Length: 101
Length: 383
Image (cartoon, rainbow over the protein chains, first blue to last red):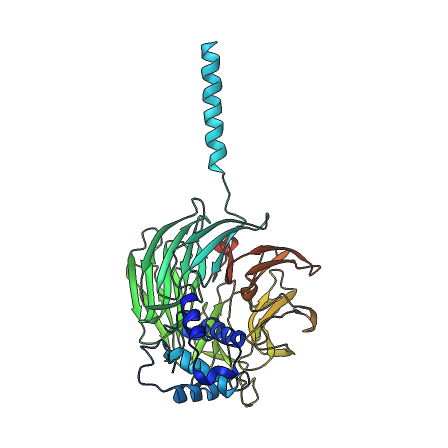
């Protein structure tokens, strides 16, 4: 996980400039621990599906950002809009897809 | 003279060997899951200290443990399908199998001979010989399987997230016998069995209410309880599923976490009717009765997970609020309830409280601690 942190923090997406480094660290922690409570600590799945880069192949940053913000009705995936900004949700989507450009 | 010095040497060696053995009886030991590092702490409750850190358990997110009847072994259920047998005496791993791809807890039979694991992938329950960890039985369910508990009479009971069924697997005969009960409700997310082994209570994510089965009945049928407790209101987003555990009985009532609401629900333990509800700081994750049933301690889902509230069972009033720190994940009482250990994940710490004064009396360092399990669970149905 430490390695992932380094990768993510060394090469953040350009538009992530508005997120402070400490906020980015918090979001990475949130992904591991709190997304992880349903999707597994290694994001390999649990009650929620696997959300590793391989498992998310074919998804777009925008598509994932929408799911993070609005959840998936009829499933256990909640809307994170009350807790996260659009930029933060986009950062999470890019982090999950390991998109850095 | 030579005989005397030989005797002295013999005694010195023998006493030295005994001193090195450092015997620890297991009755007030416990284990703490360190979720991120895949390690487990063996802790001493009375000394409020760590005896050992044992590594090599794999992915321990949402891990849990049960104990052998002699309190020597802990069986640790990992997220990644790992079932690991930890020897508390030698402080080493005594056995380990990767039994599935994705798991969600387990149970040990009343005779201590079988350990069952509940799996998401492939969905179902697998049962293992507690001594050898050899596979004994396999119950594929075609669904994510949750709420696995042991019931008296060599039975395991478990429920299906996708199909809304509960199965009772009776392991007492030559071949397992399965009783299937359909229509438990939409998306069961967890379940508990009461300490007397009689009632199995299933929490539902997909509908407003809970379901119960009377396991003393020859043909258990579904009984809905607290139907419509959300009054049809849109539930709040659920950032962490509540947990149901066999510590719900508080005197004459059950304390149950509401889903998608900032409430603890009170259910009459005899009539199974609502007695009231308590407004809480956040969405409850655990509502755990102190073993005497007088108080219920409640922790909360993200982002309100820095707080614990203590509710008086008889009145439903909040007696006390604690702010242990970021991400309180689990609470474990001593067998007689005089102390409680609290895992504070993001502070990398276990806090220990006196449950009568609410004073913090100790803390121990732990790496992202989650579940805490004391060996006294060995002697409780459903834990």
